Length: 231
Length: 389
Image 1 (cartoon, one colour):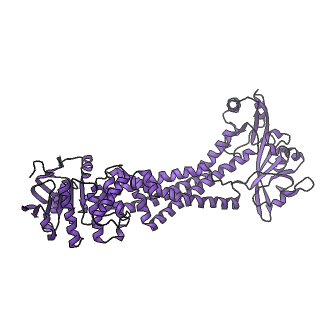
Image 2 (cartoon, helix red, strand yellow; image 1 turned 90 degrees about the horizontal axis):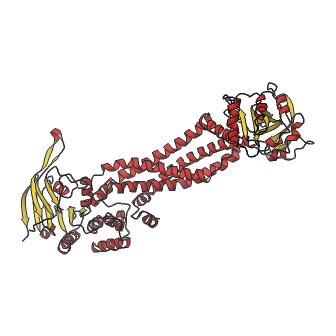
Image 3 (cartoon, helix red, strand yellow; image 1 turned 60 degrees about the vertical axis):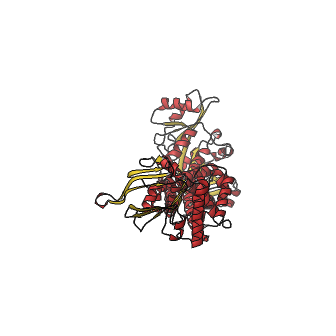
């Protein structure tokens, strides 16, 4: 374990609702994720794994406890810092959330243009390259409506990876993929960890890819009940 | 188009791509904006025609200063003024000459219907006070009951006035007298009359038995060369009394247009029509854009998660608003131009599509669409990236 992990969570608590309807969903969660590792969050539905993921990804405000992401404390961070930090992250959603009026290439370009006005030709080459890596080199100008579910998910993966994020948060990225495609996607994420030091945290129920994980954290009823690390 | 916009914006034209992805919605939005543009352009055209017809009456005369009664809001409104004012005005060293002008309306009953003629009576020797084309006609009106008619009078067949002369006049009766129309000139129809009729002051007074030669409607003055009419008018007003309107002709025309545009029902209706058109456009564009935002909330939330700031989404919505404004303006402009021609053919009113009007409406449409877009961005707050998981 490195001295300065990209993700360090300490004493994290989280509630939903207010007043009498206020309910605690996360209880005193603490964890660290190593740089370049692939960490899988598992657990039954409602165990809080997605909530932990969104808190770590700064998609929800931290209410109590500490989440230190890439050296920055998220508890109390301002909106500007939040936007800047998100640009260093990549997100892969279970529902791919592609923009239906943009082609595969344009959807991936959205993952690059967030970094500002750069070399447009370079951006396009990078988008085409990543789409080629996920096997969609022949589908660059297809609209999402003309792609299969698996192909859409691969475009979403390409969009998340094209900006060379330091951390990738993924929610059931293989749910819409067949076994081979799902494994290919996870292997790609793992390869990124090796080659670029990209850290991946993934929520999944897919037992077919567990062997690729560097660490598996199990949550039940908002608490970490188990932590396994590959040897 | 996509590449052009990408160059202009320096980013993917997401707004354009969104709009063109839903062709049916885009067509409906363009039709809505075009409809609003037609409303605004036609109302502005009519308001412009109103101003144009107001000028036509004044344009028959060539004077520097006009003296009217205090309630003389237009050329045809208001009380009479004492003709003695003419002599008092002539006492000013910078007033070269003056003439009394009498204004009334006669009805010419024809088989095709009644024709209202705005009638002016003026001293037939005062040729310097009418526009040059009327100067040779005016002396011929010295003979009793002679008249000159506006050849553009509504429903007046061209052949009726084609060969008018003293030997072959057009005769018609009005106000119990028979007039002989021996010449024609180009005036123009208006909102209150179908055309103009020019008479000598004596024929006018004979036709309007209740009018007195000592009480004309206006007094027209010419200043000496080099004098400033505005300065002379101000001096005369101070000398003649505060109850009178003593103005340069340009000031009188401007005040008439202002009064008829803002105080008279016709002008108010035209202005109201413009406001209605703008509101219709605002509502349509807001509806289109807010629906578009609602339909793409998940995608916007995804972009938020990627790190796009709020300003980016406002830019996309404004991009859509300006595209709708531009695309809607083109058919709106073409339809309105066609309606101008049709209305001109039907009414002979001077509807004219000027570059200034077209540019002003295009810019106004862009501002209105942008405003609708800004209102629509309020729905973006509902795009919460946390809800994506």
